Length: 240
Image: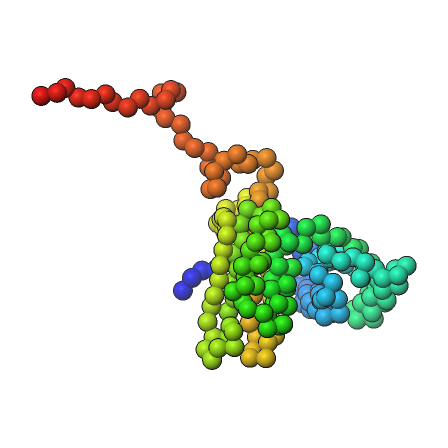
């Protein structure tokens, strides 16, 4: 068996911050955890078409702040903020707490792994060729400036009788390098033959900006020969 770890979870507390930021006692923890799940599911179900890769939740004693990362902020805000006010009221009715919603625009959606995965799933649901879809996603992400991308599809691809796994990758994906900014996204494409799982890894560069920029693809500087000077090749030996 392979030991596979979610890259974002692997980096939480080291390079990544928590998606839910609050503290609770043992008695309250389970209720607040379920409440966070309900908030995320409600927003994704209602505004899934607006490209929401990440939802962050912060809690204080009397209020809940929901930070929505979205590629299309205008869809959620609506005309004169009508949509966002409506969403705020619905979430307050769902949780029974005072809700504050903040919007943060995703500047480069082609580099966000979750949005890339959702775009692939949308194409598969429209019965597009999975190989062509993967190739297109790789090209768009690499052209957008990513250091690397990996895509993995699993299910009844192309409507085949047996499920199988197909994937492709481009560039560098150093999953074990903690300072590498690896973004991960997962979704399911609901096709007529069944669900197809879509996993995407995107290497967005280095958390430590400017460190290792001129190094090789592995992030290591080339070794210099000992003695400080260039190595000299030995001349021809004595001729017999």
